[in-house]
Image (cartoon, rainbow, N blue to C red; front, side):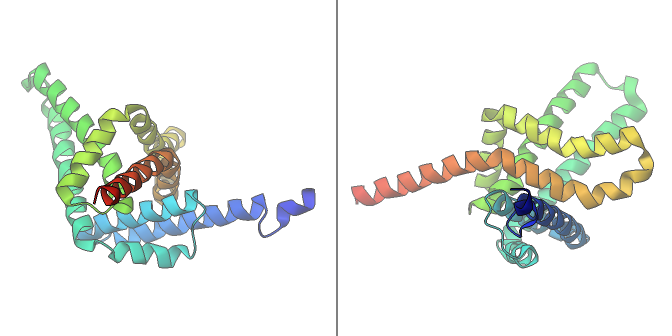
Length: 218
């Protein structure tokens, strides 16, 4: 019925509520990432809240964000620093190749590009994994790499999601770049959560089955 569109539990209200939460998450993530050491916890909280939104489990988004921000703070901080160092190292290499170019053998440039692509794909899974599962840092990185390789189509889809908004803005006009930061983080994380939600549900089911089998054996 048309009247139900405007109900509090109707599609219009749900859409506006989701949109508002996406903007709130983008702002919170940006603000909380200003001291770079908190970049990891901010991204972890962003993904945790996004996954709850996708699963229709969200409550108070601000409260959930800061609760997840504080949980596993040290591990998330280390992963965030690792991410930033890796990104800076790869960006520095790309800048060097562009500026000097012909001084480097083609095989070196290709090898650097492949290594950068692998690291980038792994990074797409690190914070979602950290947001949903409690694992040591080394295990999180290993599992993220494994997912990036074995779930390559999903990895590419997530990469396209993260590049879509900046690409559209740059194509239309560079004047809108500041607006990207208000939409990019929350939007990309939300649609990425749509991609890995079913996969994480499968992993969680396997974990439960493994725990049940272990109890039965004991």
